Amino acid sequence: MTTIESDIRTKWKTKVFENSAILNITNKALDYELSPESEKEITDGSFTQELNFFEYVVSRSEVSQPEIGGFSRPVYKFLCEVRYTKQIDTDGTNFNSVVDAMSLLIDVVRAQLGSSWDSVIDYQEDPISIDAPTKETVADIECYRSIARFSAIKQI
Image (cartoon, rainbow, N blue to C red):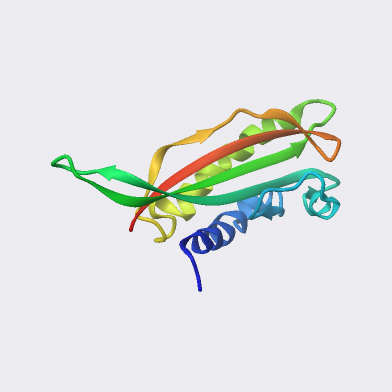
């Protein structure tokens, strides 16, 4: 049995993370949160001899959406949180690479998924939230990480 969450993950995988522009950044996109303790997952996250990967996690909540007349109706609210992690380099250029990658990600999402995430949800909410890159340690390796949050609504 397929779920809306699995449909969303499939669309993000095929339309976003298999897009040639994203593949030029990295071919590593995990549809789960990386465990810093897992050597296999860290190896899966390396690309061109440095840590360089996306993670995307989809979650769902049920919320009330106000309607005209003071009524409200329940809807599903989906959050797709995308994290991009890239190993810190000695000259600091990877900081801007992370910023640029997240900007490109938003462009690809808009072009490939559109406001309905390729007809899986009713509409994407704006604005899209993007965190500035922060320093994180992954498997004892210093990295830059930025997070983008995409939220969407689907009527129940």
